[in-house]
Amino acid sequence: MMIKVCGITTREDALVAAEAGATAIGLNFYKGSSRYVDASRAAEIADGLALLKVGVFVNEAPAEIARVREIVGLDVVQLHGDESAEVVRSIGGAVWKAFRVTESWTAGELDSYAAEAFLLDGPHGGSGAAFDWDRARGIRHRLILAGGLDGANVGAAIQTVAPWGVDACSRLESSPGRKDREKVRRFVEAALAGWV
Image 1 (cartoon, rainbow, N blue to C red):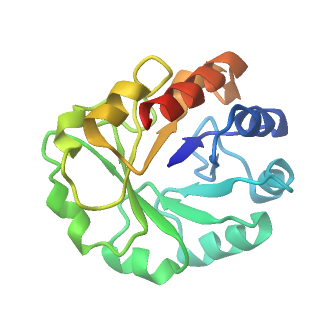
Image 2: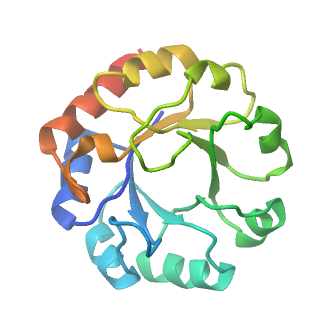
């Protein structure tokens, strides 16, 4: 099971996630985000941490992704934009492709992508809004559920979909880019209980 705390902007918050039992942190390299960190800052945050370091990119050039991956020591590249299947193949290494579950989205969209896992997010990614988890039932790909998850609902999400992983960000914060220790702890605890 993979439990990711995304939108980490400080070393302190990375340690909070690690101590709570998360297995991954997300570092956001999209400059339009309030949770943006540059590569050198991300390298300081992630240094020596024994969990997956996931870099979140939105429609970024593959060469820039490679540069950041090298500087930070990213384990996974998460593509959260409109990247084509061809771009995903060109990145190499572990790649997670994110999709917003809008009214027009269908699970068949995943079939042409050669990704290690697929992250399914709410229709307005990053807004803290959930989608109808029933739409993710029975998908044969490795799934990561995101969008509006926290300690109060992650167990139900896991029971509904049986995903490979879960990801939370805004609902674990005290303010944009700053995690709330207790919310992180409750989220991880509830996620672990959900898989039992």
